Image (cartoon, rainbow, N blue to C red):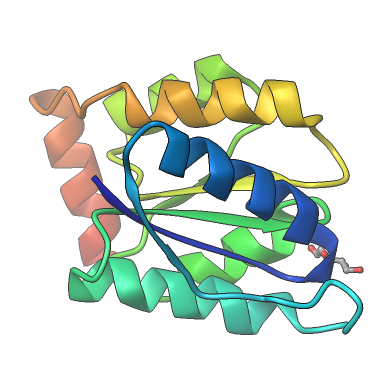
Length: 145
Ligand code: RB5
């Protein structure tokens, strides 16, 4: 699978750990930055960048990380067609895919440890959208003004 990742400085370390994990699993990874944790950057830039890549098809799914995961998930969700889900455990990640057809996973690098984060990633990537009644609900999300 081709996966786009991105973070601000606060999410950099976890983004790097996620990237290494994805590569070890045989996925293709496009890293939208940030590349230097020593430079303070703005999470809206990276949330939008990853979301645009996913929407344009440059990646099938995206993973974004900031300090809490909140700012970067809000930023990603401003891009039409993006469904970014901030997850703090594997159950949320499974449901985000199964029920919400989330195309972007958001996590907080200052919230979850690496071990938990990688379990969250595995749950997200290992679950498919269930469709059916959930499809109608996701369509409503897309048509919301
Ligand atoms: C950066 O200090 C921090 O505000 C940011 O990473 C994120 O947590 C915002 O939601």
